[in-house]
Length: 146
Image (cartoon, rainbow, N blue to C red):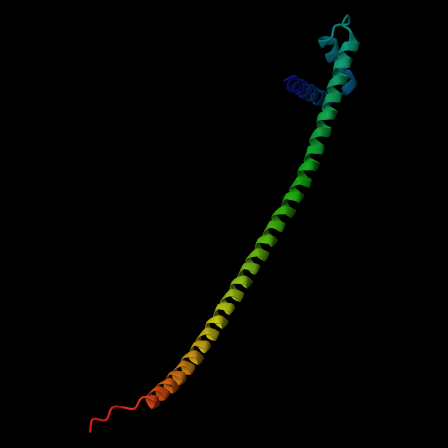
């Protein structure tokens, strides 16, 4: 709160000084000071307050510039992070697509091997069944009823 009040006082002082600069500095300022400050007032506390305000203003200016530099650095870091996430997601997407393609190819090859093996098994089982049937038929002679 105190910093806010000091800042407002500094802004008012700067506005007043910029207004005074429009005129001849030495004459106008001496005329205004004669009206505003009585000759019996203490100048040291006034100038001490003014210098304190200037120091605070310089400190605030430094902080604002420092924060804006930090903001730029953070913005660069965030942009790098976003680009890294995008590249990673693209890489993951490509890896997922490659894995799916490999899985599809594996399923295709496996199913074709299974079909081929089943054909061989059926062929072998038919030929064995036929051989067994012939052997069994030879073993048992049919009954002659004549």
